[in-house]
Amino acid sequence: TAGEVLTKLSIPRIGLSAVVIEGTTPNSLLMGPGRVTGSAIPGATGNTVIAGHRDTFFRHIDKLRTGDAIFILRGGKRFRYVVAKRKVVQPDDLSVLQATKVSEVTLITCYPTHFIGPAPQRLVIVAKFAGF
Image 1 (cartoon, one colour):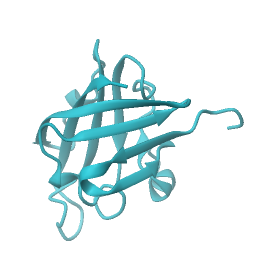
Image 2: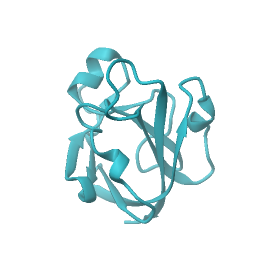
Image 3: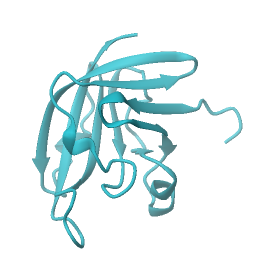
């Protein structure tokens, strides 16, 4: 949409730099990681949920560890987040989508990342806002 603010996701540990697409339709996820509609706007207070395919953009998020930096660039500002936890959940576990009162980013991809065929679980990385 014209006038929409471009959001970029950058994760130095895994060499990821990608434009975040709005929505998580199969077509949009082919273009980049997608913000789950209804989750917080990147950089705002709340839980920004971003999903990506394990065989493309989020291929290496399984290598992220507690303390790793995740950057969101939006509207000319750089927001720094730090990985706080990682967990593996079932695909129907919607608790990872819950709103929060703090600014955080939740990254979700299929798991195991090198599984052949539809992966049975989801890898979830939660990072807390740590400044600009």
